Length: 244
Length: 77
Image (tube, rainbow over all chains, first blue to last red; front, side, top):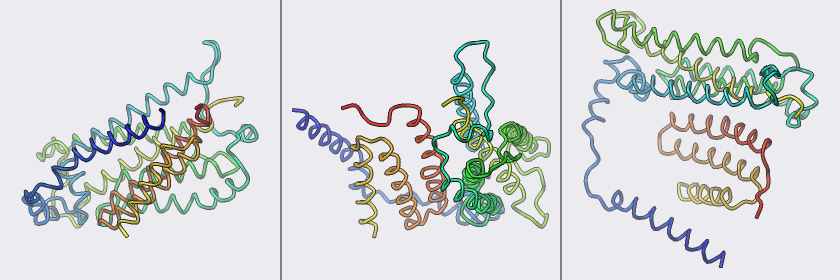
């Protein structure tokens, strides 16, 4: 009985999927080419970025990137709000301090010797690669968000692997970097208004030697914002609770 | 190559759905992310591939493992 029900479910799912994909396969309508050709000709001169993807999401559609950053900010705020109240039983107990203190190490079941050795060696390399992806987002594939996530995983590696707590794995410092970079992002987004180039317009007029300067700036800000916020969330998840 | 990758992705996805052990499912999802990152690279979308590899195989695995540690690992039935 259970098995037939399962087979019916699978068949129904495949049927619905096939019905959804069928128009795409059967359609003889040609792919829209107008915007592709426009971007191929104008993206480099409009924004100065060789990588067309980053010229779209930080040049033409920078508003969407601001929305994505806001979504990430709200979700991290919600997660931290849940995690702060998770560990305490009563109201009198003080809020949990999110840090991977050395005395918590033996109680943490995830921390094994192999993990410490590998992740402490791997962390700095991954951190360097993350900053490379972030800073060269206008030339090579990558960008602020991707580099930020790689930086976040490097910070998690370092938090798991290193013996002493450094500034890089301190959640207070990381949270301040996140707030500051979001403030700078808002300032950079509105600064174009005062220099006659519109919201998210480049305030620095073209003619300077570095044509993609505004995209590089936005990449750095977004990378720092994404990296520190995800790192704060992961460190808070791994080391937040006491006695577990 | 594409067919091989797609069938492996399908197999890993069904394993993640059907497995009774949630930790095995998470590792299968992580491997699925790596394979789809390879797939995106073949389809000439390296930006998406970097995002998929970093988010799917890195950060989401950490979050899932944390969630499993604080709940039950094995499925009931």
